[in-house]
Structures are given as C-alpha cells and as structure tokens.
Length: 434
Ligand code: S3P
Image 1 (spheres, helix red, strand yellow):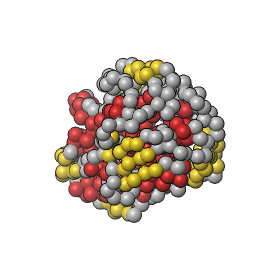
Image 2: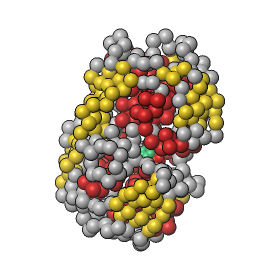
Image 3: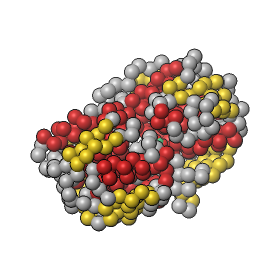
C-alpha cells in the first residue's frame, strides 16, 4: 500500500506566518488544511492578511505579504481554536508590532494550557500582556511594541517558546540570543534562512545556542512545498508494524528533519522494521542547514520488544510518545517512559490520558509523575476509550482498535480534524487490505 500523509502542522503554521510578513507574494504547496492551520489562517486574516482558503488537497496557495510590522489590530477576539502553536507563535509576532492590541483566546483544551512560558519572556523583551481570566491562561490581551534586544535561557526545550521569541525579534527588528536545554524542532530557524534571515545555531552541551543577531528590515517571500507530517505518519508506522494491512505500507514524502526523527530510533530499538528511502534535501545531524529533508518510509509487520525512553528521547519525539506508549502495550516486556512531564501540558494531559485509556482496554500501566510504565500483552484488547479532545490520543487508540482481535470504541473521534482530516478513512482502507 502506498500512501501520503497531510502536510506538516508545524511547518504549515510557520509558512503562513512568514508568508504574511514577507515583502511580495509567496507560493505555498502541500499545506495542511486541517483545523489548527485554519485557525491560524483565520487569525492572520483578522490581522489584515488577504489570502484565500487553505486548499485541502495540497494545491498551491498564493499569499500576498504585508511586510514586517504590517499587521493591524483586529476588530474582535482572535479565536485560535485548539492550536497551541498558532497561539504562541502569534503572540511573538504580535508582541513585535508597534501599537497593535489584540486578544487571543481558544477552545477549552487550549484555555487549560500554560501561556506564561511565552508571556513571561516576551514581557521581559518589552511587550505588555494581560490575562483576562486566570494568570498563565487564555484569554490574554497583548499590546505590542517597545521591544529591546533580548538574551534568554529557555527553561524547557520548547520550539514554540523559541519560535515566539525569534518571531518577536524579527518583527520588531531587535537581536535575540537564546539557549535551549535540548534540541527542540528547528523549523523556524530553517524557514528564517529560506526567507533571507541569518540565524546562527550551534550545539552547546546537550542543547543549542540560537542567535538572531541582525534582523533585516524585510523578508523574502517563500516558494515552498510543505513535507508530509512525520507526526501523522507515526500512526501509520504503528499500523504497519501491528500488521493492520497484512503487508507493507509505504508513506511518501514525509518530513525527516533530524530534530523530529526520534520516533524512528525508538521504533528501531523496539524491533520495528522501518526503511527510510529516497531522502532529498539537507539531512544528517548538522543544525546549520536551510530547508527541510524529505523521504519515503516503508514499514513491515514486526514483533516488538519493550524499550526504555529517557528525556532526550522525549525531546526528539515529543508528539509521538503516545504512539510509542501504545506500541509498548503490544511489545514483549515492560516499557519505561521517563522525563516526559511536558506531555501533561499538551492538548490534554497525555500521560493521564494514555494511562486511563490503556487500562480501559485491559493493559497494565503505571502512571508516573513524568512518564509511564507499560506492560506489553498479546491478549485481545477491548473496551471504550476517550480522546479527551486530543487528536493524537484519538488516532493512536484508533490504530490499536483496528488491530485484528481488538475492539475499541473511541469517544470524541472527531478530534482528528485538528491535524489529520480523513484519518478514519485511511485506517479503514488499510483494514480492507488484509
Ligand atoms: C510544536 C512544538 C512542540 C510540539 C507541538 C508543535 C511547534 O511543542 O509538541 O505539537 O510547532 O513548535 P513545544 O514547543 O511546547 O514542546
């Protein structure tokens, strides 16, 4: 079976932001047309952007840029829906705009997530924020402008925080010098280089130093194809490994940015049979490269064994830990996942959600402060689980339920719309193959 996955969610959102800030017209292909990027796109239109609807089929979208600093105050509250990336990156962009005032809000899940991690450093840079309900939470009012040069050590390895600060520096025209404790995804740095912005990065200890020393007055438009989302492909890698289609599955043109591929290493350590082929664009481990590497993944059914997952593994596979935890339920032995405290502040508390749902279908799990212990089993797994309004929780239990012999009902299955519209159809197609 040969498949494509929808465009990368992180890269799509960055492309929309930078295209709106560019001088000239950008041409974007392969954008993800799901709920999260649609929320970001709608916010950008409310801020003055004029581009059309996101094509659902990867066709080209042209975006006329407004120039750096070209956004204007919106007439109404910006509703970012479920999108943490959209919210936090936009906070940085808005903070960098003189005289701009906006209120950001989101759905119940997003309202439960911490915003202080972005608000605090942006406040230190000079922007003004006001929590309209609870501290550290949406809704938040931002007043942009007055930013100065900024040097900051990120307390957590977070690409959203890093990107918000770099975008604030870019829009305000002030230098930003950062260190991060671990190598979080570097799509923003790569895309900055695509639009002509020099960002220097070098390895420092276990993490990195990132320097935007000389932000330009204008950025170039993008001519760019968004690769398939490895985080979406991860569900199909699990499906292929569990033998859902009864044969191999190939997924074409998946983004293989080395800051994202931790899941491939974890699967390999578990004994999965995944082949990477046809890699194009920059690859390898260097952090000083422009664009995004892509390649094809082929996965064959395999027997899995337990694995020990530490904090460094988690940073490199942050959104794929649910996939690994569910793979662990089908592996021989006990899997330990530690250093994964960040999972508690994603679209839902994913540690809790995984523990509750795995138990509900008959898997033995220990919930730890910062992770999970999962006892593998080959017994049939049956029961009802809850997506907890989290797209990735919905999908991972969808895959587990589709394995022969299992029967799992997923409550809130529509959550997949956030990142992978059509997911349930793809799963059905795979089942029909066997
Ligand atoms: C993202 C960064 C990660 C990831 C999220 C997307 C991004 O979050 O979990 O799905 O696009 O920058 P953190 O930066 O909070 O770790």
